[in-house]
Amino acid sequence: MKRLLIAVLALALVLGMLPVAAQDTALEAPEGTLLGTWPYVLPPEHNFNSFVTTGGVNTNLNLALYRNIVQLPPALFMWATGEYVPLLAESWGFTEDNSAYEITLVEGATWSNGEPITADDVVNTYAFGRVMNWAHFAYISDVEKVDDRTVRFVFTTEPSLLAERLILKEPIVYTPSYGDLVDRALELIANENATAEDYAALQAELTSFRPDELIASGPYTYTMDDVGDAYMTLRWHPNSIFSDDVKFGEIRLWAGETEATTPLVLSGELGHSTNVYPASTIEAFQAQGIRMIALPRGYGAALLFNHGVEPLNIKEVRQAMAYAIEREENAFLTNGIGATATQYMAGILDEQVPLLMTEEGIAALNRYEYDLERAAELMEAAGFTRNDEGKWVDADGNTIRLEYTFPAEFADFAGAAQNAIDQLNRFGFDITARALPWQEAAEAIRQSDFELSVWSWGSASPFASRHFFAPTQRFNYTDLPEGQRGINFEMEFEWEGELINLDTMIDEVSNGLDAEEQRRRADKVAKIINELLPFIPLNVELSIEPLNEDLIAGAPPDGDPILQNPAGGGDHWMIWYILNGLVEPTDITRNYAG
Image 1: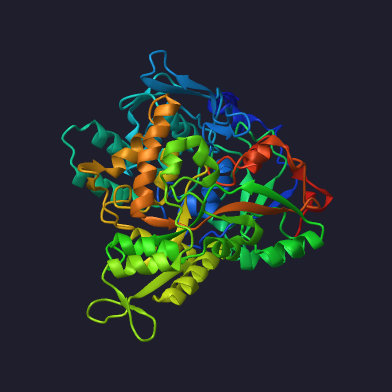
Image 2: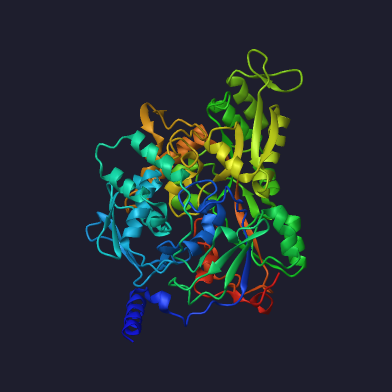
Protein backbone atom coordinates (compact mmCIF):
# COMPACT_ATOMS: atom_id res chain seq x y z
CA MET A 1 0.00 0.00 0.00
CA LYS A 2 2.86 2.32 0.88
CA ARG A 3 4.55 1.57 -2.48
CA LEU A 4 1.27 2.28 -4.29
CA LEU A 5 0.86 5.61 -2.48
CA ILE A 6 4.43 6.61 -3.37
CA ALA A 7 3.82 5.64 -6.99
CA VAL A 8 0.62 7.68 -7.12
CA LEU A 9 2.36 10.70 -5.57
CA ALA A 10 5.27 10.36 -8.00
CA LEU A 11 2.90 10.21 -10.96
CA ALA A 12 1.07 13.29 -9.70
CA LEU A 13 4.36 15.13 -9.34
CA VAL A 14 5.42 14.23 -12.91
CA LEU A 15 2.06 15.28 -14.33
CA GLY A 16 2.27 18.53 -12.42
CA MET A 17 5.58 19.28 -14.07
CA LEU A 18 4.29 18.72 -17.61
CA PRO A 19 3.56 21.79 -19.76
CA VAL A 20 -0.06 22.85 -19.61
CA ALA A 21 -0.52 22.26 -23.34
CA ALA A 22 0.69 18.68 -23.00
CA GLN A 23 -2.04 17.99 -20.41
CA ASP A 24 -4.80 19.49 -22.55
CA THR A 25 -6.55 16.40 -23.85
CA ALA A 26 -9.65 18.38 -24.89
CA LEU A 27 -7.93 19.78 -27.97
CA GLU A 28 -8.56 17.41 -30.87
CA ALA A 29 -7.07 17.56 -34.34
CA PRO A 30 -9.38 19.23 -36.86
CA GLU A 31 -10.53 17.24 -39.86
CA GLY A 32 -9.66 18.09 -43.41
CA THR A 33 -6.73 18.46 -45.77
CA LEU A 34 -5.57 21.67 -47.39
CA LEU A 35 -4.19 20.80 -50.81
CA GLY A 36 -1.30 23.08 -51.74
CA THR A 37 2.00 22.75 -53.56
CA TRP A 38 5.68 23.64 -53.39
CA PRO A 39 8.78 22.32 -55.21
CA TYR A 40 10.56 20.99 -52.12
CA VAL A 41 13.70 18.89 -52.38
CA LEU A 42 13.87 15.21 -51.50
CA PRO A 43 16.04 13.55 -48.87
CA PRO A 44 18.96 13.39 -48.34
CA GLU A 45 19.24 17.03 -49.51
CA HIS A 46 16.00 17.83 -47.63
CA ASN A 47 16.87 18.93 -44.10
CA PHE A 48 15.53 20.87 -41.08
CA ASN A 49 18.17 23.62 -40.96
CA SER A 50 16.45 27.03 -40.89
CA PHE A 51 19.62 28.99 -41.66
CA VAL A 52 20.79 27.51 -44.97
CA THR A 53 19.95 28.66 -48.48
CA THR A 54 19.80 25.21 -50.06
CA GLY A 55 17.86 22.15 -48.92
CA GLY A 56 16.62 23.61 -45.63
CA VAL A 57 13.39 25.02 -44.25
CA ASN A 58 13.30 28.04 -46.57
CA THR A 59 13.77 25.83 -49.62
CA ASN A 60 11.21 23.26 -48.57
CA LEU A 61 8.41 25.33 -47.06
CA ASN A 62 8.31 28.50 -49.17
CA LEU A 63 9.54 31.45 -47.11
CA ALA A 64 6.70 33.56 -48.51
CA LEU A 65 3.90 31.27 -47.30
CA TYR A 66 4.11 27.91 -45.54
CA ARG A 67 7.19 28.55 -43.44
CA ASN A 68 5.22 31.30 -41.70
CA ILE A 69 2.62 28.84 -40.41
CA VAL A 70 5.29 26.42 -39.16
CA GLN A 71 7.78 28.91 -37.71
CA LEU A 72 5.83 32.02 -36.75
CA PRO A 73 7.23 35.51 -37.28
CA PRO A 74 6.21 38.16 -34.74
CA ALA A 75 3.64 39.83 -37.02
CA LEU A 76 2.06 40.12 -40.46
CA PHE A 77 1.73 43.37 -42.42
CA MET A 78 -1.63 44.46 -43.84
CA TRP A 79 -0.77 46.45 -46.96
CA ALA A 80 -4.18 48.11 -47.31
CA THR A 81 -3.95 49.79 -43.91
CA GLY A 82 -0.17 49.93 -43.42
CA GLU A 83 -0.51 48.19 -40.05
CA TYR A 84 0.96 45.05 -38.52
CA VAL A 85 -1.26 42.38 -36.95
CA PRO A 86 -0.01 39.94 -34.29
CA LEU A 87 1.27 36.43 -34.83
CA LEU A 88 3.96 35.40 -32.30
CA ALA A 89 4.22 38.86 -30.72
CA GLU A 90 1.44 40.58 -28.80
CA SER A 91 3.01 44.06 -28.84
CA TRP A 92 5.87 45.92 -30.50
CA GLY A 93 7.21 49.42 -31.00
CA PHE A 94 10.04 51.93 -30.77
CA THR A 95 11.41 52.78 -27.35
CA GLU A 96 10.64 56.23 -25.98
CA ASP A 97 14.00 57.64 -27.07
CA ASN A 98 13.90 55.85 -30.48
CA SER A 99 17.25 54.20 -29.79
CA ALA A 100 15.81 50.69 -29.99
CA TYR A 101 12.82 48.57 -30.94
CA GLU A 102 11.07 46.12 -28.61
CA ILE A 103 8.75 43.17 -29.12
CA THR A 104 6.84 41.22 -26.48
CA LEU A 105 5.91 37.61 -27.23
CA VAL A 106 2.38 36.29 -26.75
CA GLU A 107 1.91 35.06 -23.21
CA GLY A 108 1.64 31.28 -23.01
CA ALA A 109 3.11 30.61 -26.46
CA THR A 110 4.75 27.18 -26.67
CA TRP A 111 6.72 25.12 -29.13
CA SER A 112 5.32 21.93 -30.62
CA ASN A 113 7.22 19.95 -27.96
CA GLY A 114 5.38 21.86 -25.21
CA GLU A 115 8.30 24.04 -24.11
CA PRO A 116 7.58 27.76 -23.63
CA ILE A 117 8.67 30.22 -26.31
CA THR A 118 10.78 32.86 -24.59
CA ALA A 119 12.94 35.89 -25.26
CA ASP A 120 15.94 33.56 -25.22
CA ASP A 121 14.63 31.92 -28.40
CA VAL A 122 14.58 35.31 -30.13
CA VAL A 123 18.06 36.25 -28.91
CA ASN A 124 19.42 32.87 -29.99
CA THR A 125 17.77 33.06 -33.42
CA TYR A 126 19.45 36.40 -34.01
CA ALA A 127 22.78 35.09 -32.74
CA PHE A 128 22.69 32.61 -35.60
CA GLY A 129 21.49 35.41 -37.86
CA ARG A 130 24.56 37.47 -37.04
CA VAL A 131 26.80 34.50 -37.81
CA MET A 132 24.97 34.14 -41.15
CA ASN A 133 25.45 37.83 -41.95
CA TRP A 134 21.75 38.73 -42.03
CA ALA A 135 20.82 42.07 -43.55
CA HIS A 136 19.18 42.99 -40.22
CA PHE A 137 22.58 43.80 -38.73
CA ALA A 138 23.07 46.74 -41.05
CA TYR A 139 20.45 48.42 -38.83
CA ILE A 140 20.68 46.79 -35.39
CA SER A 141 23.81 46.47 -33.25
CA ASP A 142 22.57 44.38 -30.32
CA VAL A 143 19.71 42.02 -29.47
CA GLU A 144 18.98 42.03 -25.74
CA LYS A 145 16.67 40.09 -23.45
CA VAL A 146 14.58 42.50 -21.35
CA ASP A 147 12.51 39.87 -19.56
CA ASP A 148 11.22 36.37 -20.32
CA ARG A 149 8.93 37.61 -23.10
CA THR A 150 10.46 40.94 -24.20
CA VAL A 151 13.40 41.55 -26.52
CA ARG A 152 15.12 44.84 -27.34
CA PHE A 153 16.80 45.47 -30.71
CA VAL A 154 19.30 48.33 -30.41
CA PHE A 155 19.76 50.45 -33.54
CA THR A 156 23.25 50.95 -34.95
CA THR A 157 22.59 54.66 -35.51
CA GLU A 158 19.16 56.13 -36.21
CA PRO A 159 15.75 54.45 -35.83
CA SER A 160 14.51 52.61 -38.89
CA LEU A 161 11.09 51.57 -40.16
CA LEU A 162 12.86 49.08 -42.39
CA ALA A 163 14.47 47.51 -39.33
CA GLU A 164 10.99 47.28 -37.83
CA ARG A 165 9.81 45.26 -40.84
CA LEU A 166 12.83 42.98 -40.79
CA ILE A 167 12.29 42.29 -37.08
CA LEU A 168 8.55 41.69 -37.32
CA LYS A 169 8.83 39.44 -40.39
CA GLU A 170 11.63 37.15 -39.20
CA PRO A 171 10.45 33.67 -38.09
CA ILE A 172 11.77 32.62 -34.69
CA VAL A 173 13.60 29.29 -34.55
CA TYR A 174 13.87 26.60 -31.86
CA THR A 175 17.64 26.72 -31.42
CA PRO A 176 18.16 23.85 -28.91
CA SER A 177 17.91 21.62 -32.00
CA TYR A 178 21.36 22.93 -32.97
CA GLY A 179 23.29 21.50 -30.01
CA ASP A 180 26.09 23.66 -28.64
CA LEU A 181 26.24 25.86 -31.74
CA VAL A 182 24.03 28.55 -30.23
CA ASP A 183 26.22 28.86 -27.12
CA ARG A 184 29.25 29.14 -29.36
CA ALA A 185 27.51 31.80 -31.45
CA LEU A 186 26.73 33.83 -28.34
CA GLU A 187 30.31 33.47 -27.13
CA LEU A 188 31.63 34.55 -30.52
CA ILE A 189 29.44 37.66 -30.55
CA ALA A 190 30.57 38.56 -27.02
CA ASN A 191 34.23 38.19 -28.00
CA GLU A 192 35.45 41.64 -29.06
CA ASN A 193 38.59 40.08 -30.54
CA ALA A 194 36.71 37.68 -32.83
CA THR A 195 37.91 37.79 -36.44
CA ALA A 196 36.13 37.40 -39.76
CA GLU A 197 37.77 33.98 -39.99
CA ASP A 198 36.19 33.00 -36.65
CA TYR A 199 32.76 33.94 -37.98
CA ALA A 200 33.36 32.14 -41.27
CA ALA A 201 34.37 28.95 -39.46
CA LEU A 202 31.25 28.91 -37.28
CA GLN A 203 29.10 29.83 -40.26
CA ALA A 204 30.44 26.78 -42.10
CA GLU A 205 29.60 24.56 -39.13
CA LEU A 206 26.10 26.00 -38.85
CA THR A 207 25.31 25.57 -42.54
CA SER A 208 26.49 21.96 -42.50
CA PHE A 209 24.56 21.07 -39.30
CA ARG A 210 21.44 18.92 -39.71
CA PRO A 211 18.85 19.08 -36.88
CA ASP A 212 17.07 15.81 -36.16
CA GLU A 213 13.60 17.36 -36.06
CA LEU A 214 11.63 20.51 -36.82
CA ILE A 215 10.15 22.00 -33.65
CA ALA A 216 7.40 24.44 -34.61
CA SER A 217 5.77 27.49 -33.07
CA GLY A 218 2.95 27.41 -35.61
CA PRO A 219 0.21 24.75 -35.55
CA TYR A 220 1.86 22.48 -38.14
CA THR A 221 5.13 20.61 -38.38
CA TYR A 222 6.44 17.46 -40.05
CA THR A 223 9.05 14.73 -39.87
CA MET A 224 11.23 13.27 -42.58
CA ASP A 225 8.75 10.38 -42.80
CA ASP A 226 6.21 12.92 -44.09
CA VAL A 227 8.33 13.74 -47.15
CA GLY A 228 7.50 11.64 -50.20
CA ASP A 229 8.21 11.76 -53.91
CA ALA A 230 4.70 12.96 -54.82
CA TYR A 231 3.90 15.14 -51.81
CA MET A 232 4.91 16.08 -48.29
CA THR A 233 2.52 16.52 -45.38
CA LEU A 234 2.46 19.17 -42.67
CA ARG A 235 0.61 17.77 -39.66
CA TRP A 236 -1.37 19.60 -36.98
CA HIS A 237 -0.16 19.52 -33.38
CA PRO A 238 -1.97 20.82 -30.25
CA ASN A 239 0.65 23.11 -28.68
CA SER A 240 0.65 26.26 -30.82
CA ILE A 241 -1.25 29.43 -29.89
CA PHE A 242 -3.08 28.90 -33.20
CA SER A 243 -3.78 25.17 -32.81
CA ASP A 244 -7.33 25.80 -31.59
CA ASP A 245 -8.09 28.15 -34.49
CA VAL A 246 -6.98 26.34 -37.64
CA LYS A 247 -9.56 24.23 -39.49
CA PHE A 248 -7.30 21.78 -41.33
CA GLY A 249 -5.75 18.71 -39.72
CA GLU A 250 -3.03 18.53 -42.34
CA ILE A 251 -1.60 20.40 -45.28
CA ARG A 252 -0.54 18.38 -48.30
CA LEU A 253 2.09 20.03 -50.49
CA TRP A 254 2.20 18.40 -53.89
CA ALA A 255 5.75 18.34 -55.27
CA GLY A 256 6.72 20.31 -58.32
CA GLU A 257 6.33 23.52 -60.25
CA THR A 258 4.05 24.60 -63.10
CA GLU A 259 4.36 21.54 -65.33
CA ALA A 260 3.75 19.10 -62.47
CA THR A 261 0.90 21.00 -60.83
CA THR A 262 -1.15 21.98 -63.90
CA PRO A 263 -2.81 18.53 -64.22
CA LEU A 264 -3.45 18.50 -60.47
CA VAL A 265 -5.37 21.76 -60.70
CA LEU A 266 -7.35 20.50 -63.69
CA SER A 267 -8.16 17.17 -62.00
CA GLY A 268 -9.41 18.81 -58.81
CA GLU A 269 -6.57 17.57 -56.60
CA LEU A 270 -4.97 20.95 -55.88
CA GLY A 271 -6.83 23.63 -53.95
CA HIS A 272 -4.41 26.56 -54.14
CA SER A 273 -1.14 27.27 -55.90
CA THR A 274 1.32 30.15 -56.15
CA ASN A 275 3.01 28.67 -59.24
CA VAL A 276 3.23 30.72 -62.43
CA TYR A 277 0.92 29.51 -65.20
CA PRO A 278 0.86 30.65 -68.86
CA ALA A 279 -2.19 32.45 -70.23
CA SER A 280 -3.52 29.37 -72.04
CA THR A 281 -3.40 27.34 -68.83
CA ILE A 282 -5.15 30.08 -66.87
CA GLU A 283 -7.92 30.05 -69.49
CA ALA A 284 -8.22 26.26 -69.11
CA PHE A 285 -8.55 26.65 -65.34
CA GLN A 286 -11.26 29.28 -65.72
CA ALA A 287 -13.13 27.11 -68.22
CA GLN A 288 -13.46 24.51 -65.45
CA GLY A 289 -14.87 27.10 -63.06
CA ILE A 290 -11.70 27.46 -61.01
CA ARG A 291 -11.38 30.89 -59.47
CA MET A 292 -8.24 32.90 -60.25
CA ILE A 293 -7.03 35.37 -57.60
CA ALA A 294 -4.70 38.16 -58.75
CA LEU A 295 -2.13 39.52 -56.30
CA PRO A 296 1.00 41.63 -56.61
CA ARG A 297 3.83 39.09 -56.79
CA GLY A 298 6.40 41.42 -55.30
CA TYR A 299 9.13 40.76 -57.83
CA GLY A 300 9.93 40.43 -61.50
CA ALA A 301 12.30 38.47 -63.71
CA ALA A 302 15.79 39.93 -64.13
CA LEU A 303 18.73 39.17 -66.40
CA LEU A 304 21.71 38.61 -64.10
CA PHE A 305 25.30 39.20 -65.21
CA ASN A 306 28.44 37.59 -63.86
CA HIS A 307 30.59 40.71 -63.74
CA GLY A 308 33.71 38.58 -63.52
CA VAL A 309 33.12 37.33 -67.08
CA GLU A 310 34.23 39.34 -70.10
CA PRO A 311 32.68 41.31 -71.75
CA LEU A 312 29.88 41.48 -69.16
CA ASN A 313 32.15 43.59 -66.98
CA ILE A 314 31.85 46.39 -69.56
CA LYS A 315 29.05 48.84 -68.78
CA GLU A 316 28.33 49.63 -72.44
CA VAL A 317 27.79 45.95 -73.23
CA ARG A 318 25.24 45.64 -70.42
CA GLN A 319 23.51 48.82 -71.57
CA ALA A 320 23.45 47.54 -75.16
CA MET A 321 21.72 44.37 -73.98
CA ALA A 322 19.11 46.47 -72.18
CA TYR A 323 18.36 48.41 -75.37
CA ALA A 324 18.29 45.20 -77.45
CA ILE A 325 15.52 43.48 -75.46
CA GLU A 326 11.93 44.47 -76.25
CA ARG A 327 10.57 44.17 -72.73
CA GLU A 328 6.86 44.09 -73.64
CA GLU A 329 7.49 40.94 -75.66
CA ASN A 330 9.62 39.51 -72.87
CA ALA A 331 6.93 40.22 -70.27
CA PHE A 332 4.24 38.45 -72.28
CA LEU A 333 6.44 35.39 -72.75
CA THR A 334 7.29 35.46 -69.03
CA ASN A 335 3.76 35.29 -67.67
CA GLY A 336 1.20 36.36 -70.27
CA ILE A 337 -1.31 38.74 -68.74
CA GLY A 338 0.46 38.35 -65.39
CA ALA A 339 3.54 40.39 -66.29
CA THR A 340 4.28 43.91 -67.50
CA ALA A 341 7.44 45.39 -69.00
CA THR A 342 9.65 47.27 -66.57
CA GLN A 343 9.33 51.02 -67.16
CA TYR A 344 11.69 52.88 -64.86
CA MET A 345 14.73 50.55 -64.71
CA ALA A 346 15.42 51.94 -61.23
CA GLY A 347 15.90 48.78 -59.17
CA ILE A 348 12.54 49.52 -57.50
CA LEU A 349 9.35 47.78 -58.66
CA ASP A 350 7.45 50.15 -60.95
CA GLU A 351 4.34 50.49 -58.80
CA GLN A 352 6.50 51.63 -55.86
CA VAL A 353 8.72 54.09 -57.77
CA PRO A 354 6.36 57.12 -57.43
CA LEU A 355 6.11 56.43 -53.70
CA LEU A 356 9.79 55.84 -52.98
CA MET A 357 11.50 58.39 -55.26
CA THR A 358 11.15 62.11 -55.98
CA GLU A 359 9.78 63.41 -59.27
CA GLU A 360 13.21 64.82 -60.11
CA GLY A 361 14.86 61.47 -59.45
CA ILE A 362 12.36 59.65 -61.65
CA ALA A 363 12.83 62.15 -64.50
CA ALA A 364 16.60 61.52 -64.47
CA LEU A 365 16.23 57.80 -65.18
CA ASN A 366 17.12 56.22 -68.53
CA ARG A 367 14.13 54.09 -69.57
CA TYR A 368 16.21 52.01 -72.05
CA GLU A 369 13.38 51.89 -74.55
CA TYR A 370 13.87 49.30 -77.30
CA ASP A 371 16.45 50.73 -79.70
CA LEU A 372 18.70 48.43 -81.73
CA GLU A 373 20.60 51.33 -83.29
CA ARG A 374 21.52 52.72 -79.88
CA ALA A 375 22.48 49.21 -78.76
CA ALA A 376 24.81 48.85 -81.75
CA GLU A 377 26.40 52.25 -81.06
CA LEU A 378 27.22 51.15 -77.51
CA MET A 379 28.75 47.88 -78.68
CA GLU A 380 30.92 49.73 -81.18
CA ALA A 381 31.94 52.27 -78.54
CA ALA A 382 33.09 49.33 -76.40
CA GLY A 383 35.32 48.10 -79.24
CA PHE A 384 33.16 45.39 -80.80
CA THR A 385 32.14 44.96 -84.44
CA ARG A 386 29.85 42.62 -86.36
CA ASN A 387 31.40 39.89 -88.52
CA ASP A 388 30.08 38.66 -91.86
CA GLU A 389 27.53 36.48 -90.05
CA GLY A 390 26.17 39.45 -88.10
CA LYS A 391 27.71 38.30 -84.81
CA TRP A 392 29.50 40.64 -82.44
CA VAL A 393 33.25 40.00 -82.24
CA ASP A 394 36.11 41.58 -80.30
CA ALA A 395 39.23 43.20 -81.77
CA ASP A 396 40.78 39.75 -82.35
CA GLY A 397 37.73 38.46 -84.19
CA ASN A 398 36.47 36.31 -81.31
CA THR A 399 32.70 35.94 -81.22
CA ILE A 400 30.97 36.90 -77.96
CA ARG A 401 29.75 33.48 -76.84
CA LEU A 402 27.86 33.19 -73.57
CA GLU A 403 25.78 30.65 -71.66
CA TYR A 404 22.46 31.63 -70.09
CA THR A 405 21.29 29.33 -67.26
CA PHE A 406 17.73 29.24 -65.99
CA PRO A 407 15.60 27.14 -63.61
CA ALA A 408 13.82 24.49 -65.65
CA GLU A 409 10.79 24.22 -63.35
CA PHE A 410 9.98 27.95 -63.10
CA ALA A 411 7.83 28.75 -66.12
CA ASP A 412 8.17 32.50 -65.70
CA PHE A 413 11.95 32.59 -65.34
CA ALA A 414 12.38 30.01 -68.10
CA GLY A 415 10.16 32.06 -70.41
CA ALA A 416 11.98 35.30 -69.61
CA ALA A 417 15.38 33.69 -70.17
CA GLN A 418 14.53 31.95 -73.43
CA ASN A 419 13.00 35.08 -74.91
CA ALA A 420 15.96 37.21 -73.82
CA ILE A 421 18.31 34.69 -75.44
CA ASP A 422 16.29 34.78 -78.67
CA GLN A 423 16.24 38.59 -78.81
CA LEU A 424 19.93 38.99 -77.94
CA ASN A 425 20.94 36.39 -80.52
CA ARG A 426 18.93 38.22 -83.18
CA PHE A 427 20.90 41.32 -82.22
CA GLY A 428 24.20 39.51 -82.78
CA PHE A 429 25.25 37.72 -79.61
CA ASP A 430 25.90 33.97 -79.58
CA ILE A 431 24.12 32.77 -76.43
CA THR A 432 23.22 29.17 -75.61
CA ALA A 433 20.59 28.11 -73.08
CA ARG A 434 21.16 25.72 -70.20
CA ALA A 435 18.26 24.54 -68.04
CA LEU A 436 19.04 23.46 -64.48
CA PRO A 437 16.92 22.22 -61.56
CA TRP A 438 15.85 25.37 -59.74
CA GLN A 439 17.89 24.73 -56.61
CA GLU A 440 21.01 24.20 -58.74
CA ALA A 441 20.32 27.32 -60.78
CA ALA A 442 20.15 29.44 -57.62
CA GLU A 443 23.26 27.82 -56.17
CA ALA A 444 25.16 28.40 -59.42
CA ILE A 445 24.42 32.12 -59.08
CA ARG A 446 25.63 32.17 -55.47
CA GLN A 447 28.81 30.31 -56.41
CA SER A 448 29.43 32.63 -59.40
CA ASP A 449 29.31 29.53 -61.60
CA PHE A 450 27.38 31.14 -64.46
CA GLU A 451 27.70 33.77 -67.17
CA LEU A 452 24.14 34.96 -67.67
CA SER A 453 21.19 33.84 -65.55
CA VAL A 454 17.70 34.80 -64.47
CA TRP A 455 16.27 35.36 -61.01
CA SER A 456 14.01 37.79 -59.21
CA TRP A 457 14.58 41.49 -58.69
CA GLY A 458 12.76 43.94 -56.41
CA SER A 459 10.87 43.04 -53.27
CA ALA A 460 7.44 42.76 -51.70
CA SER A 461 8.38 45.58 -49.35
CA PRO A 462 7.34 49.19 -48.80
CA PHE A 463 11.03 50.16 -48.42
CA ALA A 464 13.46 51.10 -51.18
CA SER A 465 16.40 49.39 -49.44
CA ARG A 466 14.72 46.00 -49.79
CA HIS A 467 13.96 46.58 -53.47
CA PHE A 468 17.61 47.46 -54.12
CA PHE A 469 18.66 44.41 -52.08
CA ALA A 470 17.60 41.92 -54.75
CA PRO A 471 19.72 40.95 -56.56
CA THR A 472 22.46 43.59 -56.14
CA GLN A 473 23.14 42.56 -52.53
CA ARG A 474 21.25 39.28 -52.22
CA PHE A 475 23.35 37.56 -54.89
CA ASN A 476 26.60 39.43 -54.33
CA TYR A 477 29.72 38.87 -52.26
CA THR A 478 28.65 41.51 -49.73
CA ASP A 479 25.78 39.42 -48.38
CA LEU A 480 26.63 35.85 -49.37
CA PRO A 481 28.56 33.44 -47.13
CA GLU A 482 32.33 33.65 -47.14
CA GLY A 483 33.83 32.51 -50.45
CA GLN A 484 30.71 33.04 -52.58
CA ARG A 485 30.93 35.87 -55.14
CA GLY A 486 27.51 35.70 -56.79
CA ILE A 487 27.08 38.28 -59.55
CA ASN A 488 30.55 39.59 -58.66
CA PHE A 489 29.57 43.25 -58.95
CA GLU A 490 32.07 45.46 -57.15
CA MET A 491 30.33 47.69 -54.60
CA GLU A 492 33.14 50.19 -53.95
CA PHE A 493 34.00 52.45 -56.88
CA GLU A 494 34.30 56.05 -57.99
CA TRP A 495 31.05 57.82 -58.86
CA GLU A 496 30.81 61.45 -59.91
CA GLY A 497 34.26 62.21 -58.57
CA GLU A 498 34.04 60.48 -55.19
CA LEU A 499 34.69 57.00 -53.84
CA ILE A 500 31.40 55.39 -52.80
CA ASN A 501 30.29 52.15 -51.18
CA LEU A 502 27.04 51.13 -52.86
CA ASP A 503 26.48 48.38 -50.29
CA THR A 504 26.41 50.94 -47.48
CA MET A 505 24.31 53.36 -49.51
CA ILE A 506 21.66 50.69 -50.09
CA ASP A 507 21.64 49.76 -46.41
CA GLU A 508 21.12 53.40 -45.42
CA VAL A 509 18.45 54.38 -47.97
CA SER A 510 15.52 53.58 -45.67
CA ASN A 511 17.13 54.61 -42.39
CA GLY A 512 15.40 57.08 -40.13
CA LEU A 513 11.80 58.24 -40.00
CA ASP A 514 12.01 61.08 -42.57
CA ALA A 515 10.27 59.80 -45.73
CA GLU A 516 11.44 62.72 -47.89
CA GLU A 517 15.08 62.13 -46.97
CA GLN A 518 14.61 58.44 -47.77
CA ARG A 519 13.33 59.40 -51.24
CA ARG A 520 16.38 61.56 -51.89
CA ARG A 521 18.68 58.71 -50.88
CA ALA A 522 16.71 56.35 -53.11
CA ASP A 523 17.17 58.75 -56.04
CA LYS A 524 20.96 58.46 -55.74
CA VAL A 525 21.02 54.66 -55.57
CA ALA A 526 18.45 54.31 -58.35
CA LYS A 527 20.53 56.54 -60.63
CA ILE A 528 23.63 54.41 -60.02
CA ILE A 529 21.79 51.17 -60.71
CA ASN A 530 20.11 52.71 -63.75
CA GLU A 531 23.48 53.80 -65.16
CA LEU A 532 25.68 50.82 -64.28
CA LEU A 533 23.04 48.07 -64.69
CA PRO A 534 24.35 45.40 -62.32
CA PHE A 535 21.33 43.50 -63.73
CA ILE A 536 18.53 44.15 -66.23
CA PRO A 537 15.06 44.30 -64.64
CA LEU A 538 13.06 42.72 -67.45
CA ASN A 539 9.53 42.81 -66.09
CA VAL A 540 7.21 42.99 -63.09
CA GLU A 541 4.91 40.06 -62.33
CA LEU A 542 1.47 39.52 -60.89
CA SER A 543 0.60 36.32 -59.08
CA ILE A 544 -2.42 34.77 -60.80
CA GLU A 545 -3.32 31.99 -58.37
CA PRO A 546 -5.87 29.20 -58.87
CA LEU A 547 -8.20 28.74 -55.89
CA ASN A 548 -10.55 25.77 -56.18
CA GLU A 549 -13.56 26.64 -54.01
CA ASP A 550 -14.77 23.04 -54.21
CA LEU A 551 -11.72 22.17 -52.09
CA ILE A 552 -11.16 25.29 -49.94
CA ALA A 553 -13.97 27.33 -48.41
CA GLY A 554 -13.80 30.83 -46.96
CA ALA A 555 -11.29 32.59 -49.24
CA PRO A 556 -11.61 36.40 -49.37
CA PRO A 557 -13.84 37.82 -52.13
CA ASP A 558 -12.38 39.79 -55.02
CA GLY A 559 -11.71 43.33 -53.88
CA ASP A 560 -11.08 42.38 -50.26
CA PRO A 561 -8.33 44.65 -48.86
CA ILE A 562 -6.21 41.68 -47.80
CA LEU A 563 -5.70 40.83 -51.47
CA GLN A 564 -3.49 43.92 -51.68
CA ASN A 565 -0.94 41.87 -49.73
CA PRO A 566 1.65 40.59 -52.22
CA ALA A 567 2.36 36.93 -52.83
CA GLY A 568 5.98 37.41 -51.81
CA GLY A 569 7.52 38.85 -48.67
CA GLY A 570 5.74 36.73 -46.06
CA ASP A 571 2.44 38.66 -46.01
CA HIS A 572 0.38 36.34 -48.24
CA TRP A 573 -3.30 36.45 -47.35
CA MET A 574 -3.34 32.66 -46.97
CA ILE A 575 -1.06 32.85 -43.91
CA TRP A 576 -3.59 34.95 -42.00
CA TYR A 577 -6.56 32.95 -43.25
CA ILE A 578 -5.09 29.56 -42.34
CA LEU A 579 -3.86 30.56 -38.88
CA ASN A 580 -7.14 32.23 -37.91
CA GLY A 581 -9.38 29.49 -39.27
CA LEU A 582 -10.91 31.72 -41.96
CA VAL A 583 -10.38 29.08 -44.64
CA GLU A 584 -11.74 25.63 -43.97
CA PRO A 585 -12.29 22.29 -45.69
CA THR A 586 -15.27 21.54 -47.87
CA ASP A 587 -17.22 18.29 -47.91
CA ILE A 588 -14.67 16.96 -50.40
CA THR A 589 -11.57 17.79 -48.35
CA ARG A 590 -12.98 17.23 -44.85
CA ASN A 591 -12.33 13.50 -45.15
CA TYR A 592 -9.90 13.59 -48.03
CA ALA A 593 -8.46 10.21 -48.97
CA GLY A 594 -6.76 11.08 -52.27
